[in-house]
Length: 442
Image (tube, rainbow, N blue to C red; front, side, top):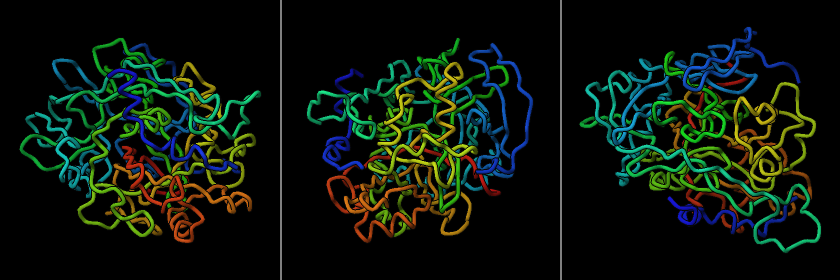
């Protein structure tokens, strides 16, 4: 796909918000492990640090969740797409029994992914109903060869200024291109031919190696290591929140070019067809039985600069924590590849440089979170704080979806352009499976 084609796929988010006024203790439940040398097997493995306790993981098949470099080591599976070798992971399925056998998240909503959207789920061929237990042939695969670029020097459509724009005025960026683009027939959501169970099985690398885990010419932009002898891959996770709790989640795909670039994920436009935009309307609940989506929340004009004095525990609740699009774009590392070879990038992300979105639900019941409402297919709800809220300093860290919904009902938060809060304007879907709780048992 050409750069022009990618640009055409970009959503209206940047244009819609161009005129917006912008305004601890150690992590518990971890155990220290010794450092191991990086392997030289087809991309190697990331060096290890502090390990999250196993009982905090929602994806229990993860061999480890590393809190020093913020990656999850997942089982790796081999397949074929158009005659090329591809490598994939499994994170979710719509079938509870298979979820237990695979050690992945159970998402009942995934069974609705094919509803009125054949392109949203690709049919794969294998001789076992349980994915990953026999060779798999995919219809398509991502193209990881494009170079990820993100020019944040000044806000798009802003007047030309004699001096550089101040730090908060970096959203939307002037130019961006995602580092991976879905090929024909590709979706991370798959079903075995003749079956109705849907799996979340994103492809994270293509070819037979050697694998580029520095500039990601044949690997997903969040791949820190890949070992085709041990059959494992190390994937950079994101720190975020759900119902006031600190969580970790993975990020694989987005239907929108800008979001894919910012989140270091694969541009997969077909996902925008998943039912339904505003399926639960975001402001009330995501309770439509026929929806494949759940709600995830981010902000344009939340406070920035708090990351200059981050908490020692890394990105978590409390003072010293920023979130949102302007925040993520305000940091120099946003345009630099995530790789073990770039430790400053990994350290910045651990300390809170990512967007830190808020999940409406997790694959475990707690508080207002209902596991039956969880889906890795997230309906992105972009919030803009009112000028009054910004002036009063009410645009600080938010960690609970119910809080965001209450603020939306009161008009403190709107969608870009002053429209009612929700996803109808942008209709962006991102594939972000839950990985773990950072402060509580799963």
